[in-house]
Each structure stands twice: as structure tokens, then as C-alpha cells.
Amino acid sequence: MTQIKIFGLKPSLDAHKIALSGAIHNAVVEALAYPADKKFHRFIALDEGDFLYPEGRSRNYTVIEISMFEGRSVATKKQLIKLIFENIEREVEIKPQDVEITIFETPKCNWGIRGKPGDELLLDYKVNV
Image 1 (tube, rainbow, N blue to C red):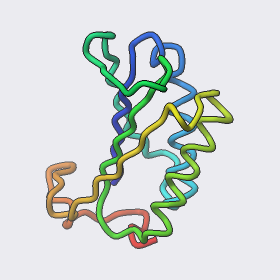
Image 2 (image 1 turned 90 degrees about the vertical axis):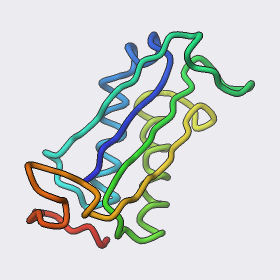
Image 3 (image 1 turned 135 degrees about the vertical axis):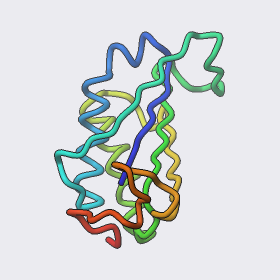
Image 4 (image 1 turned 45 degrees about the horizontal axis):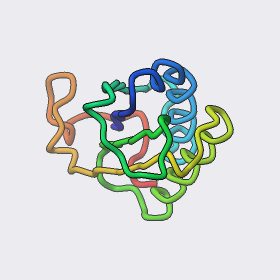
């Protein structure tokens, strides 16, 4: 399971939402061997007064938080981060300087999905990649 939150200034997210979603999802599918039909993205568009960011970033500054089951290797997570940066720069034209990514991993038992704890689900994909 992978759920993704994308934070940014409202005008930037509104302009790039579809392309950002595609760039991120393609990286998740490739790096995690994740099913293409499973996309869980939430966009959190913020007003300027609600999104303070460091000097040296543009108005396209974007924060991506990825929540997922634990079990992926360090190499797989690094590949995911690399692909997200590459895809966003190529497909959305937002520079890596303006993107920050955090991965949060939790045990499957800490998830509740379709009426069950996550560790009781039968998945159609592997987590240990």
C-alpha cells in the first residue's frame, strides 16, 4: 500500500496537478513494482500565508509525503526518490531544488484497509522489493 500527499501553493498545484500525479505514479509503479491501477494521491493546496518555505525555492516548491508498508529495500526507496525527481523535472518542469520527498514506512498491522488490518489483506503485489 502506498498513499501520497502532495503539498504546495494552490496556484502551482492547480497548474501541475495532473502532470505531478502522473510523474509520481509512474515512479511508484516502476520502482516498487506497484500495480498501475492503484493510485492514492491527495493534493493539499495551500494559500501563501499557510505555506512557508526556505529562501532559494520558487513558487513551485512542492513537498511529497509517501506513506507505505514497511519492507522495501534501501536501494528500492532510493530508486523511487531518484525517479520522482527525474520524472517531475522532465514531465512537470519543476526543478529538484523545488521538491522535497519524505517516505514514512509503517507495519502492515498499523493500516486499516477494506475493513481489515493491513497484515490480513491478500495483496496482488509484493512489498519486499
